[in-house]
Length: 355
Ligand SMILES: *Cc1c(COP(=O)(O)O)cnc(C)c1O
Figure 1 (cartoon, rainbow, N blue to C red):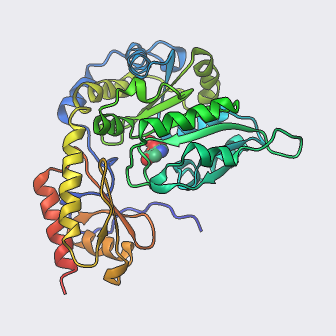
Figure 2: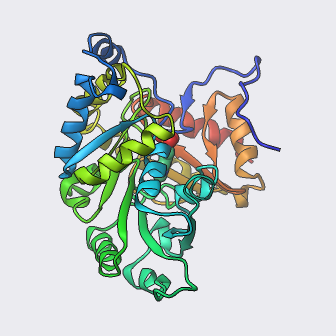
């Protein structure tokens, strides 16, 4: 049976502290005002000036020739895989990569590629592990065409790739003749946490995208960047997948607003994540991973509760976090949760686990 998201039960208490995901933010009044006055046109026809402004700005920011606006991060990953690969190809990624765990099997279903998952701590692998996965180019072996990395590594605990490790991996891919793609859903969290400029961080990536709905406060939208030739080919897949839009400038305006107002403040989310992890670490039974950015993962096994059981109980007290594994919970900080909210979340979970 397929799990279809259901509406919350009518008697569920109001959510007071939402640590479920950094996608749960609501567009602010100021963001909505920017959307309201956006100049728009037919995006599919190439006539939306606000979409052009967003794409130009992103291409410049990431040091790439061109960019394309897409509705979601998942579509960015899939359009990139479809553009870089042919059916039967092999893609190399970390075994916990979002493209393996969370995109409905799309690499197989849409691009007809197989994705091989590599080992490595905190959602990252090193150049030696990658080289071990390289196959000889022979008739029997699947052609390897793409290496994918995730910045920050979501299931890796929001980990930031150290720039030297990242570049060594991307160089090894290129030496082997493979293209490189970065799932930059939370790229700006990595930039803010590491103080490495976005352009330098993605210099070795043939394609890279940023999600505007992950902690940046926009209601939808992601931008995929690469060479002019790559983006030209990506446009055909955008069209085929139904990702070409009409007056999309109304959404691009929200993304431009996010670039102006919601990047530097990610540092606050990171500080709140540290506050949250320190608070949760005080609770007997919770084993908390040290956060590097805005994601706080913790193990519930010593409490006798699964992560989902604890999440359900917290939800009944108005606090939301997510269960990412049987005993692995994830709490996520973002612009709609302040310090007081973090403290309240810790208090509620602490009370639930008091013996
Ligand atoms: C959320 C996420 C995506 C997909 O983005 P959507 O905008 O939700 O489609 C891809 N990769 C990672 C690492 C993510 O966290």
